[in-house]
Amino acid sequence: MTQLTKILPISAIILDEEIYPRKGIDHRRVGIFAENIRDNFKFDPIEVEPVPGRPGKYRLLDGAHRWSAYKSTGTEKIKVIIKDLDGYDPLLYAATKAIGPKQLTEDEARATARRVYTKNSSLSSINIGKAIGRARRTVDTYIADLRAAIHMDMDIKVFRMNRLGIPQDRIAKRLGLVRTSLHYHLSKMAALPNSTNADLSRGFTIAQVAQKHGWTDPMVWSLALEDKDDLERFTKLDWGLRTWDLWQWSDCDKRFGDDWPGRIPAQLIAHILFYFSKTNDLILDPMAGGGVTPDTCLALNRRCWAFDMMDRIETRPEIEPCNWSLPSDEKLSWPISSKEKPDLIIFDPPYFNKKAGDYDKKSISGLSKKEYLEFLETFFVLLRHNVKKTTRFAFINADWRNFQNTPAAEEIYKGGILINDYLDILKKTGWYHTHIIQAPMSSQRFNAGVVSAMQKKRILGVTSRYVIILKQMG
Image 1: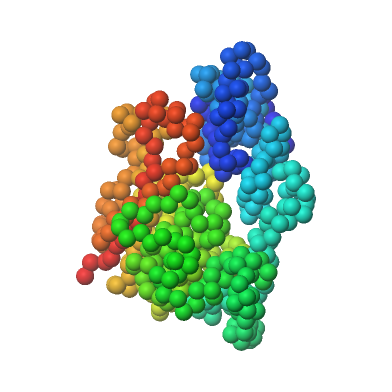
Image 2 (image 1 turned 135 degrees about the vertical axis):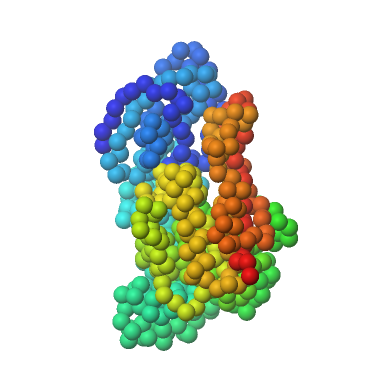
């Protein structure tokens, strides 16, 4: 680990919530620090690291409250220590620095342990515990369900993929099984849920049953909700059903999907499934990310074929690897050959320039605006050529405006990608919208300090997100 001390403009430093171990900024503490700064008290330099994919930008590793205090006093430049973590997890490093003088709360420690372990399951409970100031046994309880999911045995993998309607030849290929071995595992499928169902009938909670048997919560929900209709499933899952074309939630349902950049609420996917598909329909998710769509399909009794560029066979056997070609390559290709076509496509791609540093370098999020739109156009054509005429298409995306540090009145159209741009490309490629549903992101992602600074500068933030439902004409 190396470091360099330097003077940086405070505007070049950002607070990246993906590697910040606390739930928010303590504004009382910031106020105290601001008074100390006005009294010429000298603080230790804050620690930062370069933001991946964003030259000239640095994200905080230690000193968020000091940084906020400097900003509130109008300080333009500050001394920082630029760290090269040399592969060490930045969240874990930030958690190490947050142990004193103010300890992480129990919720913060648990959330940090889970986020770190999800990214790197090779880390031991001892190493995580040292970073967050907790005992090994405590960390074990924090990550027990995650660890169980990672060590999912072959029977459960087969059961999960089979329940999502993945054909046997693809299950065998994915899991490296010969046909005779696959048939052996499939022969156990009828009896496999018996002990799980027995515990459910005794009144154990979904989480308790999942942890005991090494299943994921969505798999247990798929059993617990057997023979229920969609309305009953929504009630049992405690998802209030939105009747109008405004779908809004304050947070993602943590039971569904992994902790993932740009994680989408399972409630949103569930509403798309409720209104635009039927029980046992085949759903296609070409960029499945953290697995929210297949998890939600398990809970709502839909089949699902999911693909993603990141291969996680131990934790996500149902998400088959597919590295969609980028515009610079020859052409896009369809990942499978199958007579069966999806009834519904759910396409929630990485949004342009949003969290590009957190995704793989080959993610479309890091493309230029021109390349990003060209990719979507080519991809929409590819979808049309590989689905039924009756297939519905749910495209999820958001307005993108480069609003950071720019007063609303000074923004220019050519600097953004708005819903009209997507609609133009969709129509050009033969997709015609039947519904445009507003599903805004929660404004709670902006902390009070950020909101105050935006208001002073008349900056208009972005929470817009749309679900565009489409069909082919004719």
